[in-house]
Amino acid sequence: MVDRIDIVPLPPSAAASCEAILRSLPQWFGIEEAIVRYRNDIERMESFGVHDNDRLIAFLTVNYHFDHAAEIHVMGIRKEYHRQGIGRAMVNHVESLLRTKGVELFEVKTLAAGHPDPNYAKTRLFYESLGFRPLEVNDLWGDKNPCLILVKHL
Ligand SMILES: CC(C)(COP(=O)(O)OP(=O)(O)OC[C@H]1O[C@@H](n2cnc3c(N)ncnc32)[C@H](O)[C@@H]1OP(=O)(O)O)[C@@H](O)C(=O)NCCC(=O)NCCS
Image 1 (cartoon, rainbow, N blue to C red):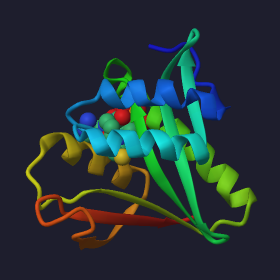
Image 2: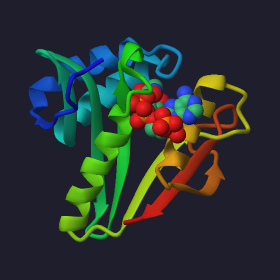
Image 3: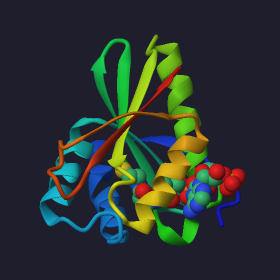
Image 4: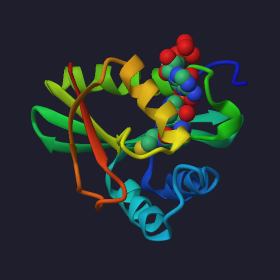
């Protein structure tokens, strides 16, 4: 349990610690090529994180698509810190920042309910609890991994 949730911008050099978080969550991030791609993306995109003492325990990476539209590209929190309000605090923090930049639409993609995975069912509950609304399901990740796009108006 962290005493206080302090959200800080992460430098590109933090990508290795973000990758370590992804690797600590194999129930969500089990595909090696995807982890490597995320690591590269984290290095060049804007990211935020939360530390417990000096250890990075949570991060969120933002992808800007247009002046008016941005996306949660990837986020992860070490399992022992789940359900302590850290994910909500990070998303709220980023939403405030996006509003100051004039961003209107905030998107996230995740595994759709057509896939039986119970872990992603929790992830969907998380996003929906923050006001994201299902927009469409598509086959961006192939037939076996239906992709749900959720969106919210900022
Ligand atoms: C999904 C994730 C980011 C959520 O972060 P978190 O810090 O655990 O979530 P929070 O404590 O901020 O939860 C906020 C709300 O979301 C909902 N929620 C979160 N986890 C939930 C769960 N396991 N079951 C049901 N609802 C849940 C609840 O409404 C919760 O509010 P409450 O605790 O007051 O009831 C985190 O669990 C995680 O890293 N999961 C693995 C990786 C992942 O799914 N990444 C996103 C895919 S790209």
